[in-house]
Length: 130
Image 1 (cartoon, rainbow, N blue to C red):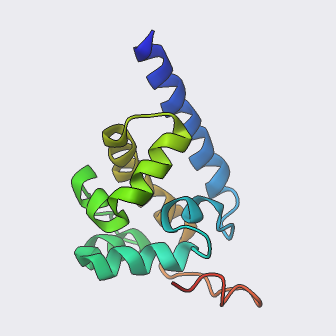
Image 2 (cartoon, rainbow, N blue to C red):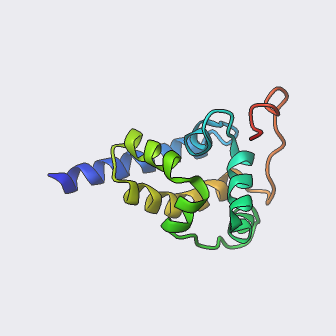
Image 3 (cartoon, rainbow, N blue to C red):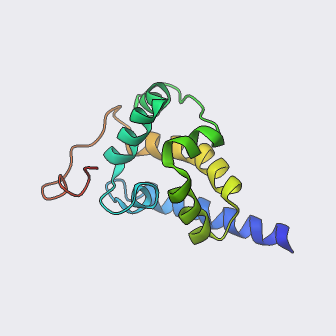
């Protein structure tokens, strides 16, 4: 039964990803990672400043995406945010970080099809800063 619930949670996370990628400019998925005021640029800066510039830059570029491990995702996001994210998804913290390691590069890649971050919309500049 636990295995079924885990698959349901994973499917919910995947469905959320697909919904998010269709709303490229939405800050909703990124706020889950960076908190209120976080947008795509905040997530990118968070990972770049956390020592994962090479990986995140590859996700933005038009080339292939470099992998990131679940442990590295945890280091970039921080344990408290990761715990909150896992709790809100109803999954184990290790599963949450592994799913983020799998899907965050794809989400950022799809949100930046031209190989660069989209310019913030008017009024979003303050919201997206750390």
